[in-house]
Image 1: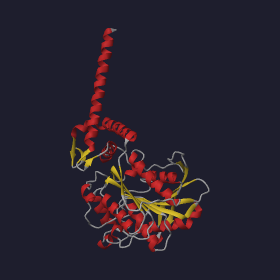
Image 2 (image 1 turned 90 degrees about the vertical axis):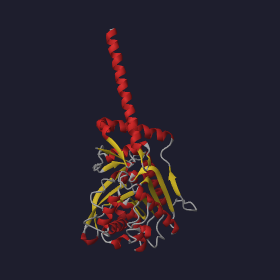
Image 3 (image 1 turned 90 degrees about the horizontal axis):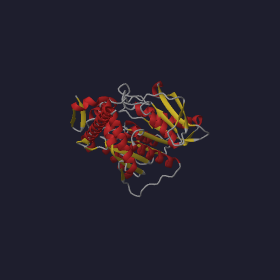
Image 4 (image 1 turned 45 degrees about the vertical axis):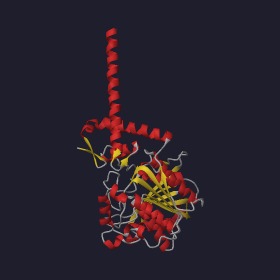
Length: 402
């Protein structure tokens, strides 16, 4: 018995030592992933970026939920999902996805334009489905997302004409889906943020429909070559958008140089930004599009448009899409939802003077939870790829596995 006890004690010591070593390796890996030339990342951001950039997680979210789905609000609002087609210019038809609450309504309407660099293969309705569902649930609104035609087969202005036509369709057919066509907002992320604000200009220039508000998530606002520090600093692609993709988008969506100067491609340089709907502009610290988004918010304000602008520290391009795993993403989505709710109920309040609000990474208990989850995810990743850690190099702020 004594001999058996000694064996068990030695085994316990060995297992404890192995676990301790694994925890040390996990802590060292997270510290390595957090350290970049562009700045130190929060643990959760670092782990998520490492997983994405090394193809350690499956980002294909082409999940087909049942026709009746449940929203993610605390109340679990039941939503009706519909996929259908609408006609656009040139006798073409484009897919549309709609989420709407059950009930009599009428409900406010949100036109959501997905990001994806204006090009095939970079984004669509399925990659943004989680945002569409959550918006409908959080705002008790009808969310309509048109799959506008994409480059290279369809260059400017196909995407914006499709998007504006979808807005007109929603306005004309609101009664059929229990929508309120007197309360329509537009929203989009990245390239979709560009489209959302351009559609706002088109509605102004073409006598409607009236738009209650515009929400722009890390929008691309110029195709012109102007000095933008964020494009230079965060251009590697590690932060989910590279300079090469931006140039490719410009070459395919706007292949002729005159297009780069058009106010419907580069709203940052538009001569007239007056009489546009109240705007919320969200940007991310580690994002090549950060500076142009913030400059556009300031230009809107200078043109007399009521604007709220927030920069979220410690996160990358597209962070709101990761709201299910990142607290900062949830915070951004909640700010957007609150803004839309206020706009739809005529309760927006703005500061007397424009000011960019800088949102800090999660603090207190939220920070503890984020770090704990980050280490848990890191441990899982190392469990899958532990041997690769020994051949990892950290170059120009990103991790490369040889």
